[in-house]
Length: 79
Image (cartoon, rainbow, N blue to C red; front, side, top):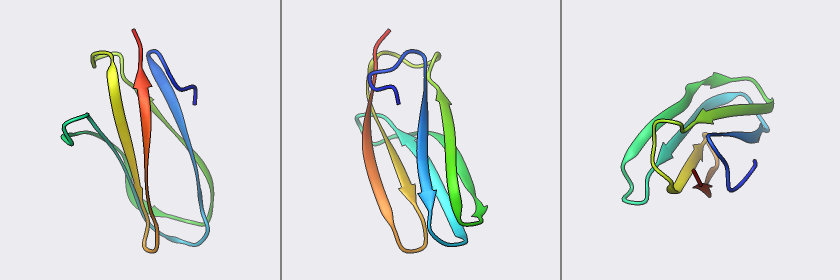
């Protein structure tokens, strides 16, 4: 949140159990443009911030992957 955002957004996520957590940002063409997390995390609530000040306005996606779960959400950057 917020969505749309400018120039930074916060991505909140919950991890129900300890494990590898991968959080990446992609552009509309599916090109990976940022890795916000790639580590083992204990169960809990987390917030990752993405500063997109170096990227153009447009639609982006974040992909959250854990051992047992994958989620993809849309974000809109408006400058």
